[in-house]
Length: 93
Ligand SMILES: [Zn+2]
Image (cartoon, rainbow, N blue to C red; front, top):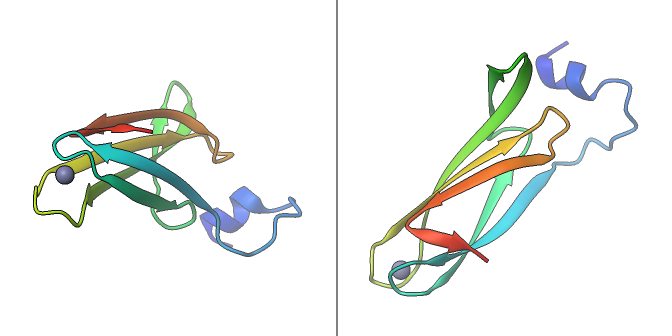
């Protein structure tokens, strides 16, 4: 039994993938960029204040030529609820 099976064991959750999706706006050119986190595969776990915190970091780049990178850091609880989010190079919309 792997970690994810333990975490989700006992819940009636369907086996389909869970994604957290979000949109950001590039600070430089204003382009809207869609981001997506795979809640089953993209998270790394750390222990914080006695509990498990799940981190995801994404670097997004738009299709324009501005080459600004938008770096996003997301924190989730073990129940995959969003705790905190930080962004560099853009803003959440
Ligand atoms: Zn841009």
